[in-house]
Image (cartoon, rainbow over all chains, first blue to last red; front, side, top):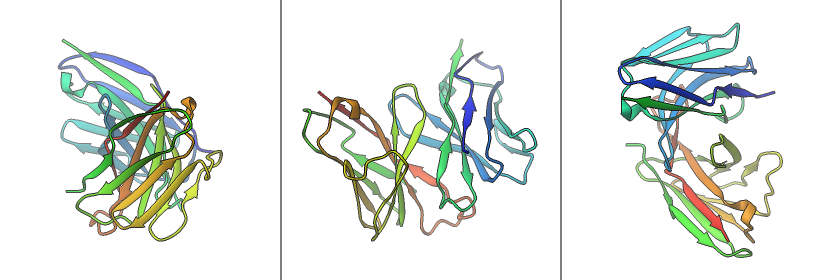
Length: 112
Length: 120
């Protein structure tokens, strides 16, 4: 089955690192994604990782994938107030015509 | 590039009326578009996959006669909520897959800004 879980809320101080976690259950995932959603808006793709990779770094973003534990994380370095949003992880399963299953979303609050 | 628009951005209607939401890929062609529904403080739930020139594929539990999808061209898909009721009030988001994307390895979906539907 497809079930993607995230913690609901994370609060960090500006300048600190944020780590948002995601667990999934389907081992057939090919790609795993991180999206950002600001209030009242659609989703913006931040980064993605292919399932045969362990890590991917893109500027302030670092994605770690532990396929054995089916655990995905997104680390945001030097978190800024503009990073405050809801973050969704999503997985794409092999052979599902690009269908994405989204996590429950984590609300990141950045405080001064 | 890769911009997806939705129209309207916000709509309020009376119970029993039908509402049409448009999803357009502005600078690319999309054979496949996806329609999602998002309740407040919840995740996105895929409703249906819209394929240009063919019938949409609906997810389990989504009534195809209530949520009519038409994908008449490579740049436009419409979702019509028929005989809307207050429980249909939600945020509807579409996404489109770029047919000619050079980053096709990840089949990236580009998301629209969403349409907030309120049924009174």
